[in-house]
Image (cartoon, rainbow, N blue to C red; front, side):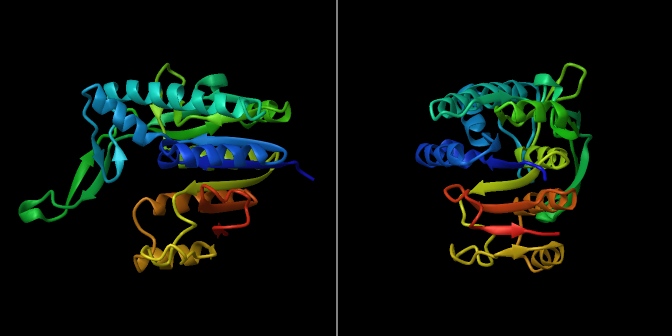
Length: 273
């Protein structure tokens, strides 16, 4: 029987809210056994960039990471946010270790090539138009070194992963935290019985965005396709659930999308294959 491992992903909105972050870190500390935390920090990066006079550009909800913005996200994700979380976990008795993908070579990525996107209002008369978008120093994950992460975890360390990876040629890359959580969970599933918990500001995936109690208890791939087609699931929730489904398909035992104050695994939306 494989040992259990809980992976919790916390987004930038929670990182920015002092009360919610404090509660989440206390709840994370209370999780028995092996655990790993993946964090975002996009809102903090946006604020720091603005304070430094660096333009923040988003296309289709995704950040354009030019060389200046790469410096900002490296400082914010790998430094300010990551080390504050590590320090606060240490204060709670958790032997946490902050990591980017470059540390110990745990996550390698490649720079995302330009992609063609359909953007609203770009064509004549405000019509949608296909445009090639270069996201700059954005990374798509190639490999997670599960053996090295497993060595840390089995020694009692709780890794705290920042959303930064590297390409093996000396370049850091800004990488989506949801993707890092899913790829890490998939890689570690061979060694551990993994539960992956995505936290955000809602109680789960909602059937009606206006009704905070309308949580969809279970979503499988057929449900997902139907909900996307009818517009129930849209925007940033689409890639989140795509990552979750890929994790389940790769052997992750359980994936849950839930409120940041409910990481006990008993609430929220369960993703199944």
